[in-house]
Length: 187
Image 1: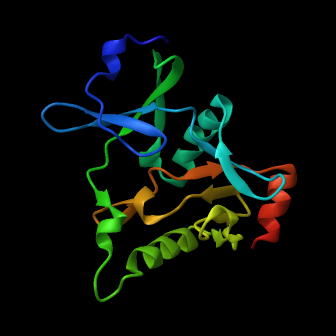
Image 2: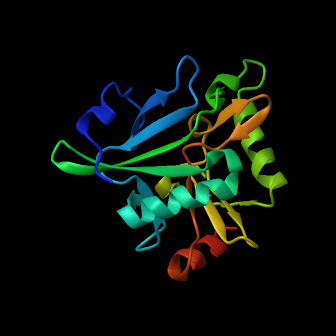
Image 3: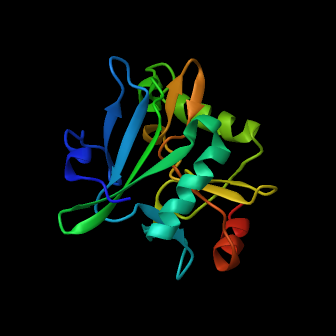
């Protein structure tokens, strides 16, 4: 599962969690994602509900839950690489040729992107979480029947393609214990 260093050459700078590379010639078919500075983020319940650095297990759990949000979001583990003195996880998923939802913001409706997110989650049975400002504006949702909470569902973490939203960089979790209790209290 150890990949050679050249597997991650030519990466484009991504957000806080990943750098990436489009794979496929001439048209991209996959996007390779390489973790940086740890293993992403994960919600924690103590002492207050907040987002903090995740563990490798939490990262893998998130990747498995992505497919429950949309079948196009299935992630595959490619392996691991050593870079900058740490181990990075390398995954890939189907390339979605959309554009960031942030580009949907119009002068006549500056909240259009947020409304599209609300509609997308509500149509799928999610309820909005009303969280304190300690983790930022409420960009989190919860589905009771599936016991899936989704954090960081902000416009820059969703793509739009052919009028369909794809939450490509959100934080899905299946909460238990104190985390579940705090989520239920935020509905």
